[in-house]
Image 1 (cartoon, rainbow, N blue to C red):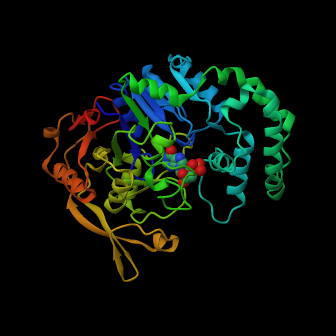
Image 2: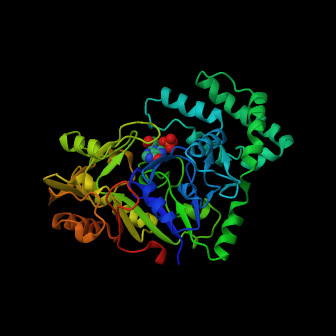
Image 3: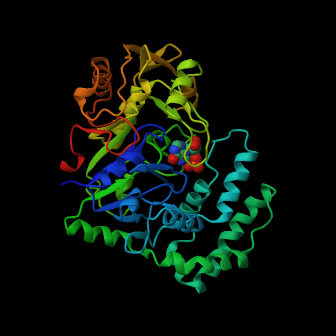
Length: 428
Ligand code: IMP
């Protein structure tokens, strides 16, 4: 049995939460390997809705859940999310949750900086305002506070001083008051015992699980087009969201991530600023947004909606090494007479079959569409491929052909059991 890595193949919000939850049933360990609480996963289990941002989706089912070193962790948010899920009847003990001791922390000063920069910038990214970017900057700048530092107050004090001397200049430039070193130290000391209860060398836990033949599920957040290298830079998040990061962000070798399952929505959405060639500002866009209930899980922001972009997803298939996809929200297309799929971009007098890296080209790209007949029948809740009408099947087959990857799973509603399995990703 292979391990499985789940990644979003578009701009996030592809419906990863439900698929990861469905796959966690078959996994022994679930691992987050990048991002932070900018993610938003909605799980519907037995009619009960759970909204997770930082916790791996496996926690709801009591699976060993690992927050890997590649994640940036807001410790206050983490404790709050643990308490919220506990209120819903799911206890999260250190037996269930493992927090990598070498993960970097998101501090209040990161959130301040994220929000102040967005407010002051003439070129907004549309971030979630949760401090993700500034926390990763401090990580690669080698001045971050890590989980393990909470266990060593004597070393923590000078680390905080060093960090604040860097932030002081930035804060003054943005008109923010200086952060207080003693206050930050005291705040961290207050939560240290609660956070350290979950801290472990996560790479070792994973190595042991792997050697014991356990099945490991890597849970990506955001999407490949938000990857800091491969996405629509600078309108991206600050981590590598692609499957390769599952290895580095967890401490497993490159073979660890196993089968790569790309989550693909049957149309396209994005939150925040940045290029979006297939965006629709017409009645079809309104249909996708209302029927698909396209509103951010955590931030409540409306998502921009558009036709399926096969060019982007084909690129994601290559960049992630996607073995198969889970196609979600096909039912949102029910009732649309004619569907369009983007098969290329027209940029000036060139037609490209990939998204170029240049910002100006990305902004200028106009979609080249192919049309395909829609369907009036409902696909919602279908539990077998045979239950789908002929035009829906044609749409799915055309998507497979254009992106160069087969559909392994088809999700037909937010409910866990409304999932059609075409190929078991754990079978490799
Ligand atoms: P940040 O990750 O908060 O820095 O935001 C950077 C970009 O990534 C913005 O366009 C956000 O809207 C987007 N983003 C971050 N997390 C998610 C997510 O979970 N789903 C969709 N978009 C996201």
